[in-house]
Length: 447
Ligand code: 9MR
Image: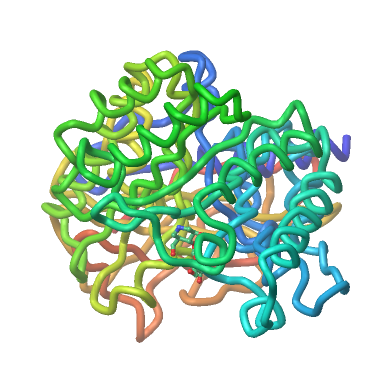
């Protein structure tokens, strides 16, 4: 019974119940992205933050994605902040969550110039010492998760834009051979893990991607264990490189897998319906390019919600780069991914607002729910959301709205500060309620 209830609350959150202002619509994305991808022999994944894997964030991460990449939790600076003293807490948490949700883990990342501990970057090392530090790091981390990581981004961002090697701690201390050595050590520590080199601005055919291509080719020739190439795909709105599929194909033809490892599409804020439609087209074309190449095995978004994206802090004035908005409402980009994976989705028609009801947690006698009101192509300056409870549920408390209940009829009206729902934006309110017997999801009407 308990697991049935958990199942109910998850289904309620993910599928929700939607009523459009303009017209009732069969709501889209009934099949989770991970299932659409699996039907095409692909995996769709997301970067995650371990501490957030509860509530709506955890429900969506678990239900929609077939692989998880720790956004920061497996980086050297996180796992060994002080030499010899390890912190695997967040990494372990993500691996455990993935296993509980039948998901792969993409390990990220073992050898990088960034997010290293200061004891390492501030130290003075001979090349023999540096080599031994790196070998120990790789053996320790890969060994710890042996058998639990589908693929490792062993080397991250080794190239400059012109295709020369980036000047880093590793390149300067060990020469270009650090790449082959890192792959060899990783393979020794977990022979089953797929080993990748991962970089950005290598999505199209250009000097940098050609340098990566030449490197992979020479590693293959030399018998170095290299299984895949990661194209990060941190893209700008409307700028998906024309040669993306051709570039994926040329790597595949070398006999390695390809993954889109960090997909996001940033836009100048504020978002509006035109930009969100372009973003949908961009996500769709990236996913379609991967779907068209057999050896393109994984498409991972770098955070699935705009509330968990690196973009706004790194590119001030830019954001809205992921498939879900900050309130966990799926954006047009979400439907772009689904459509490229063969899903038949009905995106809300332009010029409408919708309300999505979800149960975010449930216990013996009560539950917490939320309603997200999202607009595209139009905006609201005030709103009320009404529904009828079918099984005696009773609201006890609400936040970010004023809710009243008369018999089975519930009416929730905007608070003084959140009546405005901008074009391309959303607001969410929440409530606690009691239930017994069953807790069916009502249909919400916006007024
Ligand atoms: O998402 C990561 C963010 O939380 C960190 O602050 C940032 C620091 O550089 O790294 C982000 O992830 C990066 C990834 O590890 C490698 N490719 C670029 C990503 C965005 O910076």
